[in-house]
Image (cartoon, rainbow, N blue to C red; front, side):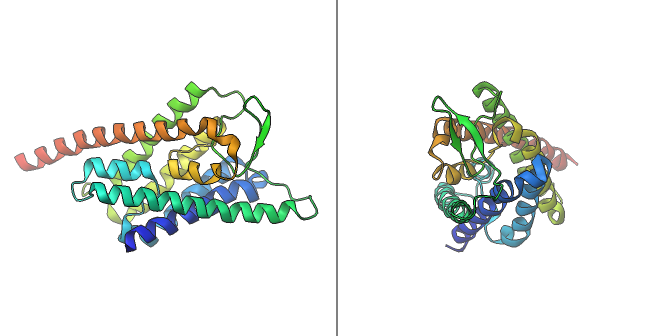
Length: 243
């Protein structure tokens, strides 16, 4: 139960603080700053709850671990995903609450994380939701999510394996998330995490038409990362056994 609680709290803070950097500070810090905030939040969480749950805070990471680690059961996978989705929902609720207070104020607060003209209605999507940004196509976004998640999960699996350096794993994972966000934000605000997409979408319904991209892309990328890492690590183990 402790590991599920850790995943719940970790995902809650990831959405609240990382997405919050776009909503509350985005106009000041820009894409580079937002990407850095995503990485720093995950870095802090890795060294806080990594020893309890592994600090997945992402269904795509949990899927990758399930496919490569026999000790991580299907029950664990389901429990982690449920905890992550609930945590993301609560984190987004807190963020919406903060934004709601601002909207009821003098109306001069400059919020970020807003995408104008979503879908055929031309409505606005808030809370740094994962939606296609101006000029991006669904094909571009889907490929971006697959490739960026592939890289991110590949780093997670390698950094946390016996071949990685445990003391530096959190730094590698945080840097990887920051990097993919800097690249992916201009395309679709960068998901690589279905839970991160799920929470804000609950409070910005215009995000749902693009939500499938944020599920399919990360899950496909995670499977590719797991297959690739399994092949590399198996070759490494055989080489060590032959020595």
